[in-house]
Image 1 (cartoon, rainbow, N blue to C red):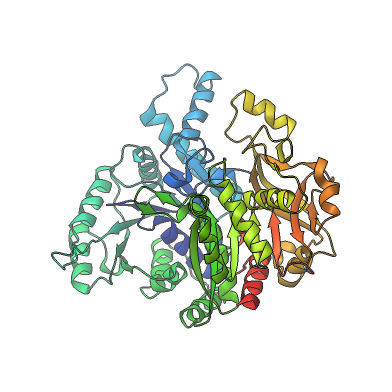
Image 2 (image 1 turned 30 degrees about the vertical axis):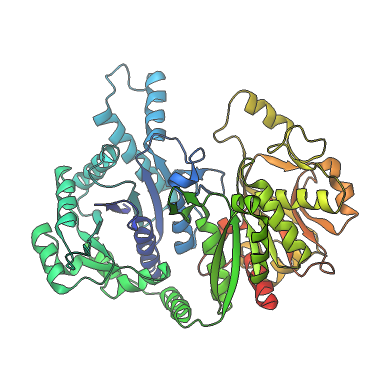
Length: 552
């Protein structure tokens, strides 16, 4: 039977459950164990596709097209594995499953209850994933914080599995220890109270990951051990770090991996994976050279606060590629709305070594992105456009170079005479019927790359194990609008070439400006950032960062 590790969080949200679970996944892989991971979210959405990125962070798309929580992106970047729809569970999906069973009389007329059938179906979900993937250990991160109504059903499933197989299930609780500025003392009471909340569900944590701004001292470890009834060796200090990839190394200082395996009665077998990881992290700490990269986005401001979770995969892909070259990336945020209000801000782009326009939806901020793209094209600043960033690059070029002054996307201006980006016919019917969730172009699709392009040479030079089928590649998508093929011939005669297409030649997947006219100007309809990993950076980001280094 597979072993199971549940990871919960207490006190506040955003303390690092996802990164902690991912770090544990990597550590156990480095000990030779086959690992799979599940994000179990309490919300009633069936998936994360319709959620506002400012409220919930980016939507991460899997190979099979499922739109999921950003934490699964962290799982993939740490474990170097690709996950699928079953690895993301929401209570909405569970309720949907139970109700459909009830409608089909699968409960044989019995009373269907939340407290019995929902946790039971959650247990079935976990066990089916573990069985289908043949994992030694299944790590389940419970969304939200202990004490919320929503995740109580998941904790109930946790309890059921622990009671049925006590030697095969452990629980790791991630709790926050604040240091109130006026007191100057680290307080353990919030962590103790969150453990008490767990106890109300008849769950007792086997380990605690104690999150804090500064390193926890032995006095606090002993206190948590005493009042939470956890072995002191199982209380793991987890202070803030400048680089999240340092977290597994910090955990291993306290023998977390070996103690977990011991608790699950499993033997350890070390592999060179951990040493490779540690070597790379040690190198990051010594970086001195820098590049300045601008991100022109719209999902950044939330009231008085600046948020970065909307673009977390882009940020991590930049990091992965920069670190591979021994470079520290400095990220400069440019809010596209601000460029529209004050075009003089464009001059600030001249101080940057490269610009990225990432994903986005709707009309707000689109003109600001187009202004930025025009500036980097004319001033030969390296450019990487991602999904919406490709669409805006096509519009800018159509307007300023091809003379189609009113060129636009049908999404932005449905009345434009030159909709160079448009909605495909089958999508129009879906929108008319208000079928929004899960109906856009999602998941991994093949793309045929022109062999005489910069795109091809970049994949060829920097490609890893995922791209050994060149000139055919597979990349993940998340969009509803496409390049309008009525304008394809016009573009092909210009300096902006179509260099990536679907194998049936129906869809434009990538464009670039010829190397004679621009040092690096590539934009893709797909999302390369979704397949970048810490140990295997994505080729396009490697090529982009290299161009930024040359520009500098």
